[in-house]
Amino acid sequence: MKKLLSVAVVFVSIVMIIGCTNTTATTSSTSTVSSSTTTTSEVDNTVYSVMVPNGGPAVAQMYMQNQPDKYAVDVVNGPDPLVAAFGSGSHDFIFAGTNLGAKLYTSNQAYIFIAVFTLGNSYLVTQTGEDFTLASLEGKEIIVFGQNATSDIVLRYILSESGINCTFTYVDSVATATSLWVADHSKIILTAEPSLSVLLGSNPDLDIIDLQTEYSLVSGFDSYPQASVFAKTTLSNEAINQFLTDLEASINLVNSNVAASAQLGEELGFGFTSSVLENSIPNNHLSFISALDARSNLESYFNILIDINPALIGGALPVDAFYYNPSR
Image (tube, rainbow, N blue to C red; front, side):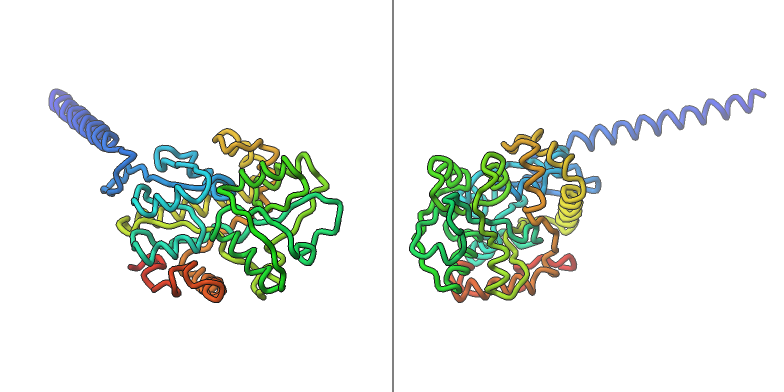
């Protein structure tokens, strides 16, 4: 009996020692979490920094933003913060116009293209009571946000291919373009979701030209890779692959659970009501396409840009290293 008791005491002691060891290891591992590091360990507790423009891009990644233990997300307005981030290397991942990332890669190979997430969500709007078609734009002024951004380029391409001449007035963001239209409904502006749904909420008779439809008609391609996500070249494949998995899951949740996603977007402070976000999500054309799968469509789009102005993508098609390859 004494022998059995001794064995039991030894067993309990071992269990307690193991338990204390595991607790200490867990505490030590947890204490390594940092929002600024980009290194990985055996148990990766890194919080990766992300920059994303407000609007459709923010909507695409909302379920990632809702995981602050994994991602620290900065939501910005306009292209200037994105350009600055590419130049400074301030963030691990950057959501941006596809051509912007390609252009900046030619001068600074700090970020590579890892996926497309938006296949176009740009529209022209006005409210004049007259027929609103491409032909009606001849000689008109259009207020355009983001000079040389994807929406601007696609608009110019469509007008050029259609033989239509317009005057462009550039502003810094879609919010500025929207505010100018609110002040004068006769103006023609380039807008995007969810701003379009904001306007439709109070102006259901808004005149709209869908640039995705017009692009398809003049180019022969079903869509264009409007916006993509880029990763620091110093990140490990494991970090990039996990990010891509989380992004694809987020996009799938947004598209399949529209009402719940709209509510989450309002809670995250995107600046739009849940009803506006719910109406806008289908028009955002969110779709996850990996870098290698998107390359063919991307190069077709880039060739169009080269015909317009090679400088829009840095002078030539991106090299192989621009495209993220999980087997690198």
